[in-house]
Length: 124
Image (cartoon, rainbow, N blue to C red; front, side, top):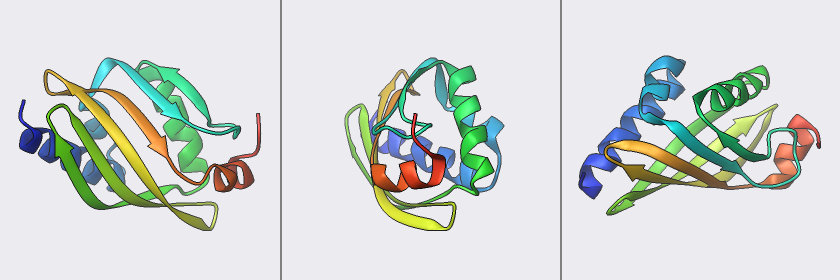
């Protein structure tokens, strides 16, 4: 897939997630997705597979988590999303790095405000 196709897939996924359509958003992820959230918050760590990611999304929903994508940058199999996240009444900028293989997201790694995540979700 081209960088442009991967960006379009990413836009569709973020749009679906923002609309509360987790099923459609999840459809863009590979079954063996690896999802990495940095820091020491209760949602930090490395998740494997859609079931673990879905469980984390449920935790995000408990704190009224939103993500507002502001920019999409792509290069081959990697798409970077510059986004504004809000949870528990706090907001911060974040960069999500999505790695694609055969049209599906196989890895998501976020770089954001880990201190905010700890305040909102608690620590491990």
